Image (cartoon, rainbow, N blue to C red; front, side, top):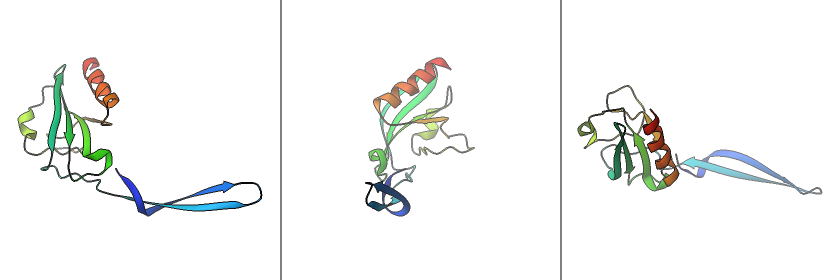
Length: 116
Protein backbone atom coordinates (compact mmCIF):
# COMPACT_ATOMS: atom_id res chain seq x y z
CA UNK A 1 0.00 0.00 0.00
CA UNK A 2 1.38 3.39 -0.94
CA UNK A 3 1.29 6.29 1.47
CA UNK A 4 1.22 9.86 0.20
CA UNK A 5 0.07 13.22 1.68
CA UNK A 6 -3.73 13.40 1.93
CA UNK A 7 -6.52 11.82 3.99
CA UNK A 8 -4.98 9.78 6.88
CA UNK A 9 -3.54 11.84 9.72
CA UNK A 10 -1.01 11.53 12.51
CA UNK A 11 0.62 14.07 14.79
CA UNK A 12 4.25 14.46 15.81
CA UNK A 13 5.42 16.66 18.66
CA UNK A 14 8.92 18.09 18.98
CA UNK A 15 9.46 19.28 22.55
CA UNK A 16 12.56 21.50 22.63
CA UNK A 17 12.14 22.34 26.30
CA UNK A 18 10.92 25.91 25.95
CA UNK A 19 8.60 25.44 23.01
CA UNK A 20 6.56 22.68 21.51
CA UNK A 21 6.30 22.37 17.77
CA UNK A 22 3.36 20.29 16.63
CA UNK A 23 3.43 19.17 13.04
CA UNK A 24 0.49 17.52 11.35
CA UNK A 25 1.35 14.89 8.79
CA UNK A 26 -1.48 13.83 6.54
CA UNK A 27 -1.34 10.60 4.54
CA UNK A 28 -3.52 8.95 1.90
CA UNK A 29 -3.24 5.65 0.08
CA UNK A 30 -2.39 6.09 -3.59
CA UNK A 31 -2.55 3.54 -6.40
CA UNK A 32 -2.71 0.61 -4.02
CA UNK A 33 -5.14 -1.62 -5.92
CA UNK A 34 -3.56 -3.45 -8.87
CA UNK A 35 -5.49 -4.30 -12.02
CA UNK A 36 -5.18 -8.13 -12.18
CA UNK A 37 -5.27 -8.02 -16.00
CA UNK A 38 -2.59 -5.33 -16.37
CA UNK A 39 0.69 -6.91 -15.26
CA UNK A 40 4.06 -8.07 -16.52
CA UNK A 41 5.98 -11.04 -15.13
CA UNK A 42 9.54 -9.83 -14.53
CA UNK A 43 10.95 -13.06 -13.13
CA UNK A 44 9.63 -16.51 -12.30
CA UNK A 45 10.96 -19.70 -10.83
CA UNK A 46 9.64 -22.96 -9.42
CA UNK A 47 11.32 -24.08 -6.21
CA UNK A 48 10.38 -27.44 -4.69
CA UNK A 49 7.18 -27.37 -6.77
CA UNK A 50 6.13 -23.84 -5.63
CA UNK A 51 5.84 -21.22 -8.40
CA UNK A 52 7.24 -17.82 -7.43
CA UNK A 53 6.67 -14.71 -9.56
CA UNK A 54 8.10 -11.20 -9.51
CA UNK A 55 5.27 -9.19 -11.06
CA UNK A 56 4.96 -5.52 -12.03
CA UNK A 57 1.56 -3.79 -12.01
CA UNK A 58 2.03 -0.50 -13.96
CA UNK A 59 -0.99 1.21 -12.34
CA UNK A 60 0.34 0.73 -8.79
CA UNK A 61 2.55 3.39 -7.19
CA UNK A 62 3.94 1.68 -4.08
CA UNK A 63 7.13 -0.30 -4.66
CA UNK A 64 6.81 0.98 -8.25
CA UNK A 65 4.09 -1.65 -8.76
CA UNK A 66 6.34 -4.63 -8.01
CA UNK A 67 5.11 -7.64 -6.06
CA UNK A 68 6.51 -11.10 -5.29
CA UNK A 69 3.85 -13.82 -5.24
CA UNK A 70 4.12 -17.48 -4.28
CA UNK A 71 1.54 -20.07 -5.32
CA UNK A 72 0.64 -23.53 -3.98
CA UNK A 73 2.82 -26.53 -4.70
CA UNK A 74 2.32 -27.89 -8.24
CA UNK A 75 -0.02 -24.98 -9.06
CA UNK A 76 -1.17 -24.86 -12.71
CA UNK A 77 0.35 -21.53 -13.80
CA UNK A 78 -1.72 -21.53 -17.02
CA UNK A 79 -4.62 -20.35 -14.82
CA UNK A 80 -2.87 -17.03 -14.14
CA UNK A 81 -1.22 -16.26 -17.47
CA UNK A 82 -3.87 -13.62 -18.38
CA UNK A 83 -5.02 -12.53 -14.91
CA UNK A 84 -2.87 -12.44 -11.78
CA UNK A 85 -4.53 -10.99 -8.69
CA UNK A 86 -2.04 -10.54 -5.82
CA UNK A 87 -4.77 -10.51 -3.16
CA UNK A 88 -5.65 -13.49 -0.98
CA UNK A 89 -9.08 -15.01 -1.57
CA UNK A 90 -10.79 -18.39 -1.58
CA UNK A 91 -10.76 -18.95 -5.35
CA UNK A 92 -8.32 -21.42 -6.88
CA UNK A 93 -5.97 -18.80 -8.34
CA UNK A 94 -5.02 -16.99 -5.13
CA UNK A 95 -1.36 -16.77 -4.08
CA UNK A 96 -0.47 -18.42 -0.77
CA UNK A 97 2.15 -15.82 0.16
CA UNK A 98 3.44 -12.37 -0.80
CA UNK A 99 6.86 -10.93 -0.08
CA UNK A 100 8.37 -7.46 -0.22
CA UNK A 101 9.60 -6.87 -3.80
CA UNK A 102 13.30 -6.72 -3.05
CA UNK A 103 16.25 -9.09 -3.40
CA UNK A 104 15.67 -9.98 0.26
CA UNK A 105 11.99 -10.74 -0.40
CA UNK A 106 12.93 -12.98 -3.33
CA UNK A 107 15.42 -14.81 -1.09
CA UNK A 108 12.72 -15.27 1.59
CA UNK A 109 10.30 -16.70 -0.98
CA UNK A 110 12.83 -19.20 -2.35
CA UNK A 111 13.99 -20.18 1.14
CA UNK A 112 10.42 -20.80 2.29
CA UNK A 113 9.71 -22.90 -0.81
CA UNK A 114 12.81 -25.03 -0.25
CA UNK A 115 11.78 -25.71 3.34
CA UNK A 116 8.13 -26.63 2.82
